[in-house]
Image (cartoon, rainbow, N blue to C red):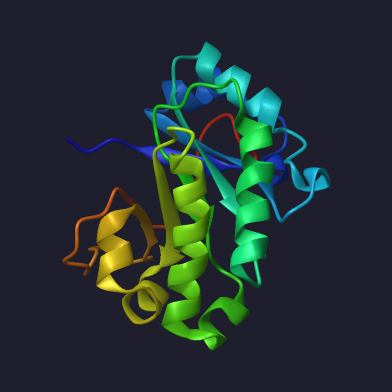
Length: 183
């Protein structure tokens, strides 16, 4: 069964989740925050979470990573947990891995950051995964890691050419949905 979802953050402004749901959206992945400090908690995370839940959308969250070591990844995981504590999620908590230095540091580095973050959240019974574009996923994440955690893969194409099980396929960054002013 195909379900349609969107990801949102403070950059999307004040969202009308009733209009979003009426547009045929089933789930929303909300940015909880970024980095290792509580100042990185998305300013609209709480509002987006409660409004999405109120409209009966299924909800997940993501944390944008700037980790430069496993120590940083652990700190980010704990900062993320502070942002999401007390909330119920229908979808995973994803680590968003996009910064160029992740890839210049190679596969072992990417694996270690993803594993550290996800394992820490799993200790607290969260379902975890990571987000990455397809080309980087194929080159910079080992099969052990990509099969261990659920994958949210970005590939802006008509068909996803990825033969490994994944959870979510993000097929565009230019979508338009009623209730949100931005793409």
